Length: 225
Ligand code: SF4
Image 1 (cartoon, protein in one colour):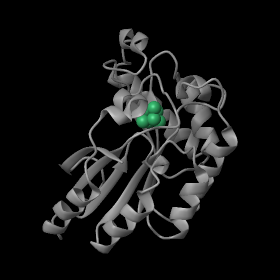
Image 2: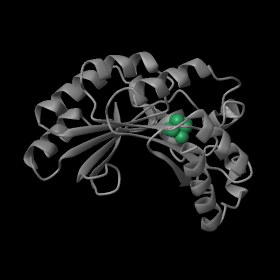
Image 3: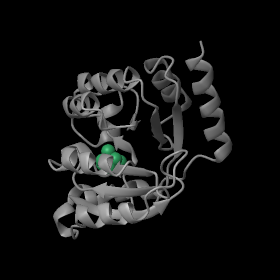
Image 4: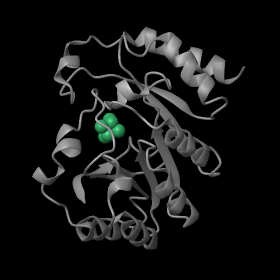
């Protein structure tokens, strides 16, 4: 289940010194994904036992206060709920990164109070979604269901879009911001043209930071309209 592990990070969970685990497999094949092995060939990567991670956290009780589940798509791992429960018993806060395509699992884990923060990728506008998710078609009802669950969860959350140059334009950002209405935390993430799942887009030049900042300001304006 665990295919990657960053033992300590200050970047992945706001307000926490955290440990991040990466679970294999994904619902999407986003062309801009940097985790091709994790998504396409998870069985080629060695397993890291959950016990190893839990022991590490237990030995650092009170120092490492957060555990981040990322991937891949963590909700695809059948062992996730047990792992979450065991982590809960150690008192760590849990953040989970999701692509939002498995709202039933999200709902179940929210109901069981096993999550403390959720971050969901919003790949693109509804019209562009399939292309940016790397699929022939995407069931947007599932995306909308996850958005609603997260917004109504009462937990801290974040929606984020990777701004792939040319594909995600200022118009795309305006449309996504309108779609998310007044979502509290919508952030943009710079696209890195390196080791992408679709090698063809390694040729793209990312937008300059100034363009990204303009887009972020545009999203903020739309959200407050
Ligand atoms: S970017 Fe995220 S959602 Fe897309 S294929 Fe990679 S891990 Fe999956």
